[in-house]
Length: 125
Image (cartoon, rainbow, N blue to C red; front, side, top):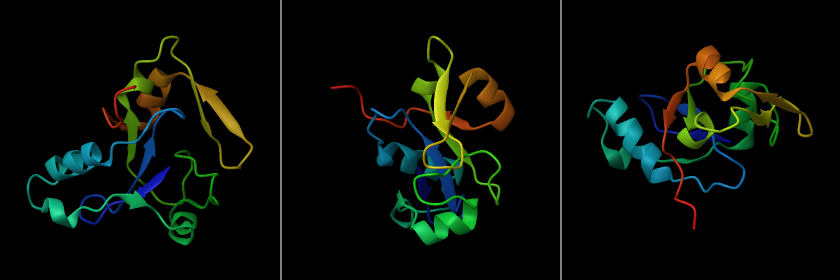
């Protein structure tokens, strides 16, 4: 999922959550507010899905094929803490084509891509 955030920082972020999880935009909004060190008012932060055209421009990937790897522009990555804590340490994510996925160790992903790892989903119901 590519989510847009009003700048600065960042203008956009790739947010990776489990398929069955529900994204909590307020938690990401709070994180961006803290990241901006109070220089950006919470009302200026607007979490929403990035329009397809903008997503294509930023990443080089089409709708439903966005991958955090090998993106056209460097975009911050936010990874759900639930993925980072998976046991076994393995997850699947998009690989640039709608029907193409890649599986990898969450620990290796964190080491390679240095995402922000945070609690960004609602609790299971």
